Structures are given as C-alpha cells and as structure tokens.
Length: 149
Image (cartoon, rainbow, N blue to C red):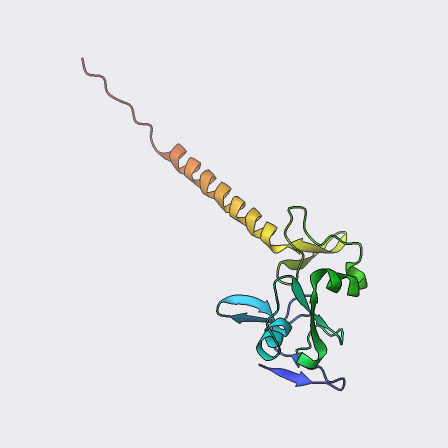
C-alpha cells in the first residue's frame, strides 16, 4: 500500500483514485475502494448493508483510526450532499461507492449508475451485432432455386 501521512494524521492514498477522490484498489480481480479494503484488512469485515465512513472527511484517507463502519442509511444522513437524494437509480440499483460514477453534463456533474451503464452498453453491442449481420446478409447474392422440368 502506498500512502503518505499528512499533518492531520490522514494516510493519503497514493494509488489510483475515482473522480470523487476515493482511492481504488483491485483485490482478486474485484475493484473496491482503498479505504474499505484497508478497513477490512486491518479492522473488521464490513457487512453488505454498511459503508465505511471517513471521520476526517478526507476521501483519500486510509488510516483505520479515521474510518468507521456505519449503516448505509446512516452514512447518507451524515453527509449533507446526500440528504434528499435518492439512494438508488430509477431501476433500483444502489448509488453506493462502487456502483456510482460522476459525469459532466450541460446541467453540471451528475451521478450515474454503473450497472445501468453496463446494461445499456450490452444492448448497444447487441444492436450493433444485429445490424452488422443484416448488412452482411444484404450483401450476399440471393440464391434462387432452379426448377427442373
């Protein structure tokens, strides 16, 4: 793990980060946030309905002394920017750290659901394959059956 300690005692993650500032790490082929991985490695397992809260409010911090496992609903209430915002996308997928990305749009930066994006991309790829198959079929010469008399 690569980190540097700042004057507040935060262990600032030096590896890859998300646009939101949270560190990311891949463990056994699965991406997760760096602070959650460190918490699970050095403190305790985090149940699925819990999130790891930064008491220091520094998203790059991976210091276990600054991290606390809290219920997801409680975590949303702790942050003003989540108050009044839906906890799930319109299809019911959770807006959690690993399923949410942020995208710049003409209306500002918006939360986006990774699972919905993956579904849209699979459908786009399927449509592309169908179109390519139709184009290839149209290019083949028509077969006519010869009639024998």
